[in-house]
Image 1: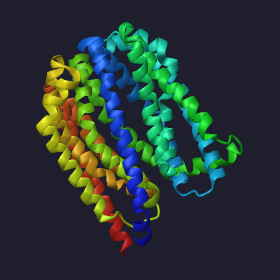
Image 2: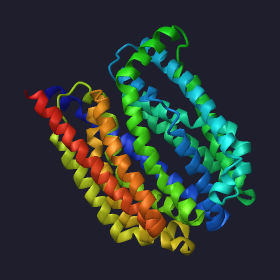
Image 3: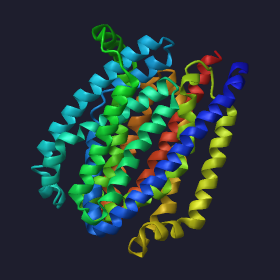
Length: 410
């Protein structure tokens, strides 16, 4: 504990960097959304939101546990050469996964219009090659958390969006759905090339480090992945189900409400990302983390309750005022998601099977709720499902953490 206290100033500094970068990212995001909604209108913006939601959903499958396994290996590593060689393997895996994603997006483009009553099939065909960028987010996040280099995470999160925003501002008068999609994806592609040059991964001894990563993935990463797939894909089904059972316009409203409420979990995520490497060496989660995290989340809920209406109208205009009716209720889901965040500790301890079990429990709640409630209640059904599933997630994590402590104390 003494060593932890010595490291707290650095931890707070890292939390501040991550939180500030996330707030800046939200500000950029609001600027992007303001331009998009102004230029596209509610119907076309819903089509654009559908494209991003679908590709993001598909990208969840193209991880296979390797990135979380890489994160753990990096957290336990203290050799810079080894770090660069592990990073090289990560780049190779991200590229291969990205190619697989491109193929799937292109194939689905021939069926998507009929399935979802949308007009995005042609856009998916022409932009399928650029969707290779999506798996690199998981790589950079794992590398930054595993090496405790939060500046890399902050930089990667912000630079593509900043470049995207500048592109939208420059070509403001000529924006269409396809132009916006192109700027979004090409901005990320440019930053990936920048990171490839800046981080200087060592593409040597790849066979040796691939075997090391493969063994870690068998023991930990794949268990984590199977749980994450069940959890995150079913959680993301709400967006696809809203588009399928209702329409893409409501999906656009829902995505904007998520954007407005999402900053409340940024502090929780920043705190636990900065603590991840320390978690791998600590015996338990410091009690102050639970206290600060809870107070922050409650304060955010109160803020959204008081000012949610004004934020939505200011950012998106009166045309999107109905978004504000969803914001406060979504904050309940984010509250329990944030409360679960400190239990990243279990991931740092390579508790892959426990995390898998938590994810499966949440997944059952997600898919059951989405199938039953969205056709009946629409967006409200998606929100209610999210709240229930996040309560289950929090309860199971708390149970497994207490079980871990009991085993620790004999």
